[in-house]
Length: 272
Image (cartoon, rainbow, N blue to C red; front, side, top):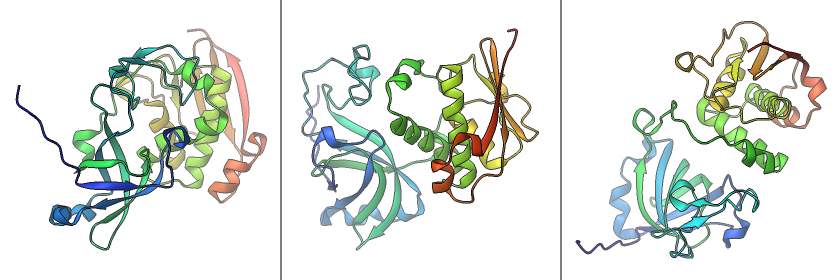
């Protein structure tokens, strides 16, 4: 086997200095690209998102099975190749980050960086939606994981899924996140499971966000007729209809409001 050599091309500057202090959704951070590699940054500002490949220098390389402890230590143990855990035989981190700005010719200001201060950067690639996004991809049922998340942590995950699909966090997306929180609580399951279908309603921002969160589409027969002023979720034996009220005009107000001020909720049984 050929000998492999990897050299860092930059370093992470982050306000988080320990792995235990890193939020699941990451933080704003900077990448300092070393002077020898500045020429490689030409054209990078044309991309809104980047693929960041880093070396997790503090990771334990002897671990083959782990638990998603960021969520809960009660979750079942799995092989590290089925987890995004930093501990693994070759601790490479591959993450999609949002490029906020390029400063001084070699400082990248980024969002959603889940890397601690001082992490070596191995490579940077442009994220290409048509190639790198597989919207039809399926994954394991996250119901148990979601149930063990704190409310704030789950909300942040919903916001990220919604914004990744819609493009921005607007009041309509915030309303969709509040609807998704309520639907998860009532249905008692991961909204992305095949048994859940939705009619997202007529508001384009809410519809975008709910599609991004749930993964529904006509091809998997989980997207019901989207028209009308209501949003409806159907799960095993139950249907939930959300009738929208006039929502506040800011994201912060929507996220802070009582559910009853945002929508009326009707739950009924259904025959599958």
